[in-house]
Image 1 (spheres, rainbow, N blue to C red):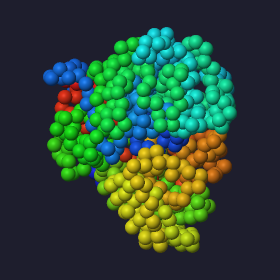
Image 2 (cartoon, one colour):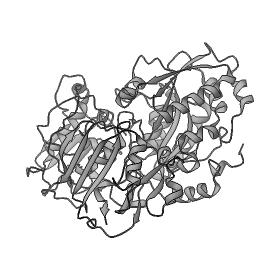
Image 3 (cartoon, helix red, strand yellow):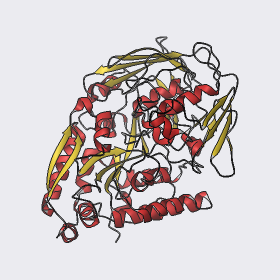
Image 4 (cartoon, one colour):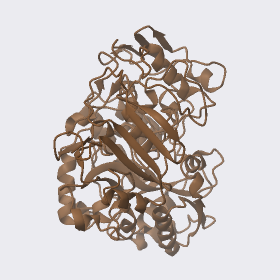
Length: 577
């Protein structure tokens, strides 16, 4: 049944109406299979989402003559890696995009064009075999690394093989493990996949199965051109030549990153600043934001709830989408995932559905930035995703405890659940609220808060561990590639070689349904099929409880002259007044 306020998704009718109109104008390019935007990209948001440009002034140099863009990041947020094979966070991807050159990329543009796949180092999109299992790229000859050496096909072969090297533990391997010979590299029996063939300016890639989404995968930062001799280092290489418009000139872990122009850059990206000074030492996320507010920094990256915290007063001071504070509908979904392979939730869809009915999503909204910071949802495809169909499966304006208790009766099993959460204020507060909201079902929830110092990669490793001890886990996840196949693969398809769904769901019928949807004859038909599948999975299988779709907030200093959001700020094309 439809509930009042369903379309407002959070109680702020004016904002919601504005958001839904914005979403309706956005397009997502064909993309693919990414269960990861890095392994299973569970992430605090993603780098290939929609773009909107706000031109505030012409590109130029600041009044002080300083044309270096200043970035402030908190010690709490941190930077995981500058090595393209390992970076797993929106901040890492935003920085890498400034010094990365890929075969194909998404353009630095707004609107529908933001999701196009266009050539960068490749002269054109690849030649694809009739069975969609072989792709051949021809490279431009004008790209050079920051030391002046030419970029040839072996630079991309090395990038691909680095994701497969077992000692690297790259989250990008989920995108390359279907290459012929990848299994031998992953097992340590070979140093390169025989399906990756580099000859001069020609790169040919042979896959074990049809993958029409493969070109879209090549837009990901894992596949930046790297020197053919770039070593394997599980801690990440910190000194290397790059082929993008900029290069890293200095990096001190947890202290700073210095990025300056690559004087040998041969591409077409229109850059405006001389470089970036990234300060990683702000004590808290709020300190980092305050530095931007005081114009001591030009930008910082954090969750929308931080920027919209009323104690900072940014919305009251600057308004939304006027001069410095911008809100863009995002693709990231905050959700509670269930370990369907564990004793509590295995073959127990009734309890999983009961929890969906018991959650008070309206109350949880406050920990996600409120109605401006996010829009409530009960489904797994974001509103912006082609094919999304609002089905009103679970209540958004409050719990339905009667329905929840009826479904939970006789299905509580041990009556105890372990809820995994990052030990960080906002998710920890959310987890505590979830614990209280599930008490009326007779479910005793214990919080397992992962310490802050290991929460980035360590948290994801805990989620994906084969011997996982958690029953529920709080995540904020964004698909690497903004495509419904990517989103649904995370929940349904554990049959890809070496892959695993986050929820441990094993359903042959739904895996077949996913494949059937992917094989629909047109983009429109595929989108509709994925939309139907999303509703069916959320309603009948319920491997997770979606809470809200997060908006992306961009906050800049008064000297920033242009803002391109995809939805994270596109650093490569920022300019200063």
